Structures are given as C-alpha cells and as structure tokens.
Image (cartoon, rainbow, N blue to C red; front, side, top):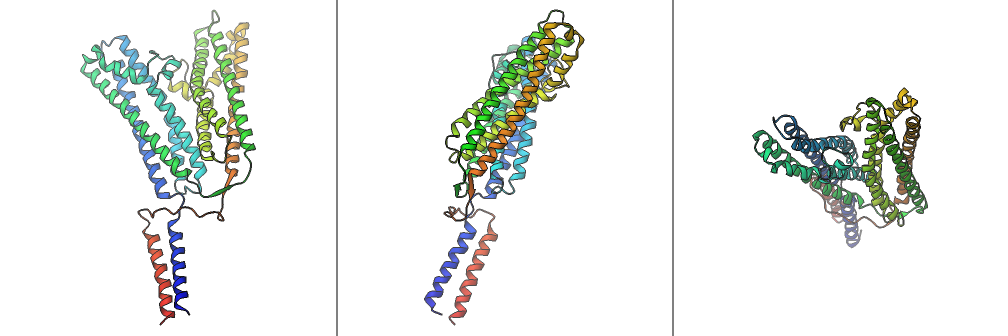
Length: 426
C-alpha cells in the first residue's frame, strides 16, 4: 500500500481518538467538586445557626438580673434561629438530591438546574431571616424593625451584657456565628452560581417545539399566585375577626391567633414567590434562549410553593416558631374552630370561621394546581431542545485530572495504528 496513504490514515485515526477522549460537554468531576462545596456550606450554615440558637438561650435564661429589654432582644434572635432550623430541613433535602444527580450530570442536567433553583430560593430566605428585618417584623417577634444581625450588635454593645462575663461571652459567640453564617451563605450562593454555569453549558441542540406551551404554563402559574394571595388575605382578616369577638375563650382565641400568625409567614414567603414569577414572565418571551434560567426559576418557585403549602398544611412551622398552639397544622386548627361550640354560638365568629375554612381549602387547591403547572412548565421546557449528534461537535475541553485511563487509551490506539503502518511497509 502507498506509504503516503497509510500516513494519512494514521493522521485521521489519531484525530478521531483525540476527539473521542477530549470532548465532554459537562465534566462529572467538575460538577461533583462543586456539589461537595455546597455540602460543606450546608454544614457551616447549620453549625452557625446552632451556635446562635444555644448562646441566645444563655442570655435569655442563664444570666441573673438581665433587663427585660435585652432578654427580648436575645429572644428575637433566638426565635429567628428557629426559622433557620425550619428552612434547613428543606435545604438539606434538596442538597441530598444534588448528591444523587451528580453521578450523571449530563443525564440529570435539567433536574439539577431545577434543584439548584430550589436551593437558591431557600438560601435567599435563610439569609434574609438573619440579615433583614422583614421576618422578625412580619412574625411579630418581641423586637421588630431591626434585623437579628443588627440586634446581635446591640447585644454586644449593651453595658448590662458587657458587665456579665457569661452574657458577653455568649453574645460574642452569637456575633461570630452570625458573621460565619453570612460568609457560608455567600459562599454557597457563589458555588450554586458556579454549578448553574457548568450545567448551562448544554450540548448543541435544535428547537423542537414552539414556546406557546411555555407561555400558557407561565400564565397559569400567575393565576395560581393570585389565588394564593387572595386565600391568604381572607384567612388573615377572618381569623382577626374571631380573635376580636367579645367573650371568646382564650383557648379559642389562641387557635385563631396561631392560624392568623401563620398567614404572616405566608405573606413573608409570598414576596419571594412573586419576584421569581415576575422573572418567568420576562423569560417566557424567549424560552429557547432562556431555558436554563427558566428551569432554575421553576426550582425557585417550587421550593417556596412547598414551604408555603406546608406552613398551612403541617404542624412544623407553628411548632418550630412556638406560636400559641403547637403540634397541629393551621388547617387542622381551622377545623377545630369550626367545630367549637363557643364559635358556633356566635354568628360573627362562625361566619368568619366558615370563610377561613373555605379559604384554607382554596389555598391548598391553588398550591396543588401551581405544583402541577410548574411540572407542566418543566416538561414543556425539556421539549424545547433535544441534543443532536448531527450538529456541530462540542468544543473540546482540557482533559481533567484523574483522566489518565482515557489518555492511556488514546496512546494505545495511536501506537496500534502506527504498528499496522509499520508492518505494511516492512
């Protein structure tokens, strides 16, 4: 055979082998490393929150003679840490999903983008519970109008706290933990962005369907949000009406107060949900271009929707936040109000309780409908693009550390082809 032709075949074979071993759209090693950083961030957040929780207790009850004003300040920070613990459960669950998906990031790319969105949304709420004043003010904690971060500084600057070695030591630990929590939250945000960027580098693809289904799903989600807000407002106002009925027993008033304060939690979460839904309304104009962003935003909304529904439908929030009646969901408490003889005996109270009961079910229905519409939107986005092998080849990426097997395989292939050439030309 012509030597020149054989050399050409060797060159083609070498090029093919190099392409096989170097092209990989999303490297599993890179994604896995970022997920491990996020795992570490979660451990740091929980550690800092635990210190805030335990050390504020020292100031509240462990120091004799501490003025009530300082106890209230410490109690507000302490109860804020209860809010952190409530959110941690949801964050930990979603990070656990990332740990599962990271084994095959190319296959699970869309699921990972949605999960990144869930964690981002919860992290934003988590960070704001300590760094902003909205949560303590909305939940009517002992000291409102200031963030727990600011209240922590007031504690360490207070002369009564400074005069007690035990109190100033605890306040110092809280202060350090608040800063550690902020640092860990910032680090997690950056790591989530890094993971999102890695996952957004999708293989070459072509549009498969129009964005009409996407726009329709977004419109349905807008409608669900309006229904949630309306139902929440009814529960908020009508539980207030029950509390205000003259002669209502304390036990009944406490149940109504618990359901009422739960709507404060709903209002707090709703602000975040609306901001993400507004992003969807912007992105839907170009769904193919914004596919990755929309998947993340679906995750943002779904995480908060679940938190919203659980605030009314389970006993976790009222128990964690130590509202007047714990251990039962606001939904269950509303049923107890409806069945209470004192409520039934008062026309104004039973009318309000009936409205609350209807609104509670409307809220649950809207939350369920939103979940289905978010799933529908996710499916529609998945259909917008399909990886194709006929389009341009992915941009080659450098061979990562630990890819020695692939490199050895390449070299072996090259040597095998070269050996055949050598034998043909002997």
